[in-house]
Image 1: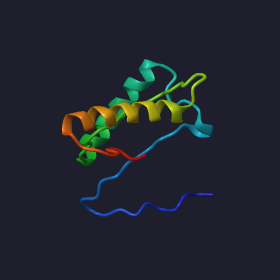
Image 2: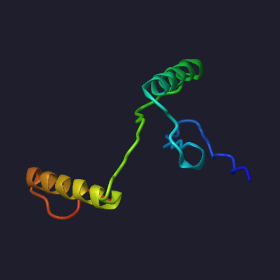
Image 3: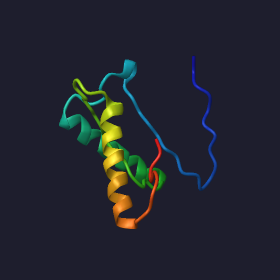
Image 4: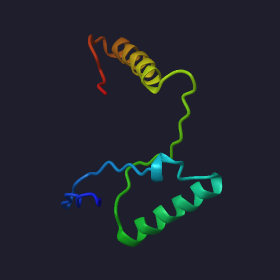
Amino acid sequence: MARKPRVEFEGALYHVIVRGNHRRDIFRDENDRVAYLKRVEHYRERYRFILYAYVLMSIETGAVGLSKIIQGIQFRNGISDQSRSCSVGSTLSQ
């Protein structure tokens, strides 16, 4: 079944996630990553869109779950931010 068309309007910001079929890796090696980035640049120039940020990401968490990893990062980041700003409470949400 095809997905519904995106709702688009001029000036909007979009968060785009691309996955491989059946959640398989999209890139086999560094050459695939470089080729993909060249295609992104080609279409950025062709259609003149603004690309604020991107990440090409693979993650293997091993025995520890991703939630536990992110929780630790966010917790430490919150403590660091609170100590710099003398604030209390959560600084980030998931």
